[in-house]
Image (cartoon, rainbow, N blue to C red; front, top):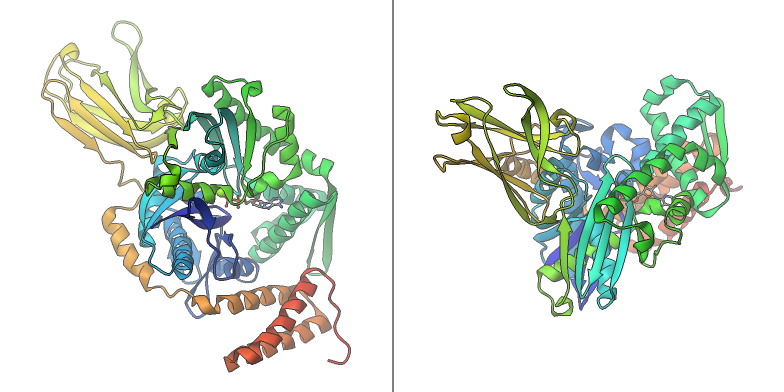
Length: 571
Ligand code: ADP
Ligand code: MG
């Protein structure tokens, strides 16, 4: 059985194709959204999901989040005394999802389809595949997130003929795809996006504004404890603005109280720059698809950040209609990944669905341009596969050296749209030896093959000798070799994951710790005693003792969370 996984910046989900429909699998807390957070507990075991997210504030030096942003780089992330690569932290999330699925399905899970932002680069995709391997999963396919969202929508519209745009704004990335559905064939016409734009940026934007408006000492920005508390308070305010007309960000530091109340209009003003940046990829995708906004039949929202009314209003204004959101925007990508799993397993219910995707960016090499007779201008980017070409694709282009008897040709491979190679993303290089020949007789054929996973292979053939070289785009600082993956797989497997059956209580305790730090004085003292009482109940390991204490404890946590807590009298 193949599972579908949405490995998100903020939240991750796992789903399966079952009885002709996609189904989400809940984690051990019974929730379908697992926060993409990892924390190293004091006993050396790994906490994943909500328990880890609670610890972002209480144990910022032992906890990591938003590491998807660093996929494809060699940034190391420290958790306590250990350091992890971004793909290793992602692997811990995947492992936890895999275990949840195994617990529910009752059999081992070894194969997965993992979604990635359409705009993910070659290095980011390879890192995602490596994360799967590190979690003991064979990655059958990397599926673009907006394509997955379309699949989730599309299976219900199979007989329709429709054109739609997927607007996917998650925690850290923004993706847009324009699709065409015709006679059961779903075709991505164009994709565009911004890898550095998501819901978290709205939080950062609010925080910067808060610092300015409240004249908070800038030095506090490097106080991890303060910042984690502020991020959480701002996240709460941002979400509150999705349901009510105004919200307040409030935080104290020593004895100073900072507070700022925002209404919708103020929020829109503060984040105007971010809202403006959402327009570009939409316009580019439509231009590449050769469509006008009025030719779209629908707009589909995906990603938790599309719950923000300011974003919905922007979409409605741009498209002149209200977007569709009949599938929960948090879940639509994972459901689509499960549909792809169904397609892969050739489920009869999906017989007629065909899906085609495109390369979201141009791929090419650095060349010198001939100006006059003998002069050249170097460093230009020459695309071989242009953006939004249907995949899989294989293209060949012939290149000549710039001088007679030139001994080598150096191929520098780039991805991007800029005119000059240096302004694009460098993927790797390959040096090819040439036989001594005059310019016109010498040359190489460069073949780019871009597969359905969005992974590139580059091959160079010397025209005269038919000798072929393959560019291995590995050995990049941001990339693990197969041998390194194998070695790290062993190290990771040795890490103890917090036992599943105890995660629920561990999560409650992590949350209690966070709330304890919020309280002061008498309340704090009283609550401290409640935590000890809960811990003592847990030690009995007797469900009859634990359950009532736990129910009471949880009610107290909710009261503190919602500020409706007062210290009981005779306690
Ligand atoms: P990702 O795919 O990157 O993991 P998600 O689709 O889970 O992201 O979306 C996470 C983002 O959605 C976060 O930035 C979160 O703050 C935002 N979000 C979730 N719910 C709401 C809400 N009700 N109002 C505003 N933003 C929300
Ligand atoms: Mg997402």
